[in-house]
Each structure stands twice: as structure tokens, then as C-alpha cells.
Image (cartoon, rainbow, N blue to C red; front, top):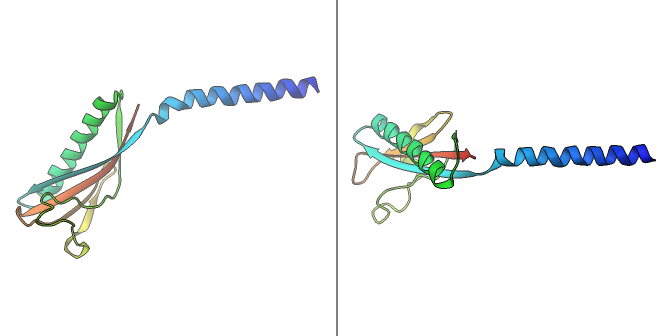
Length: 126
């Protein structure tokens, strides 16, 4: 019986220590949505993706993370001028969406500017 108690305490202690070591790895994540425009769809994609990377870096600094990683995440398109176009109707989205390991980008023709794209990502760090 004493051996069973010792083994139980040992297992419990190892599980507790493993949990402490894992905690910093999950310090946090934040959803990023970055919108930009340009005169061509390709330029709008590039600008939107660059904007997402800048937002991820700003998030890293604001949260005090030593690093940041990004994973593509589809988000709701975010138009600039919501008074003119409050939402982006699905039928005007330009296909195909542009998906990389870091961003998921959706584009559409703009009302005030030629093309608009929103890139989505999950930024994580610690």
C-alpha cells in the first residue's frame, strides 16, 4: 500500500510539473483582421497581408511577447467605408480566396477604391 501511495504522489507531482512547464507555451492568441486597398487585386492582397503582419508585430509588442506566430484564419470581410457599404455581399467576393500559411485573404471590388482585401490570421506568442 505504501508503494501505491508513493507512486500516486510521484505521478501527481510529474503531472503538476508538466502543467507548469506547458503554461508559458499557451500565453495567448489574438484574432487579427487587416484590410487594405489598391488599384489591382494582386496589389490589394499584398497590402492586406503586409498589414496583417504589421498588426501581428504590434500585438507582440503590446502583449509583451518574445515572439509571434501567425496561422491563417478566415474572417468576415471588413469594408473601409461602412456608411457606403456596411457589409460585403458574398456574391461580389473575387474568387479564389488567397490562402497562405499565415493569412486567409478575401477581396472584392471597392465602392470608393478599385479593390479591397481583408486578411485574417490568428497571432499567438509568449
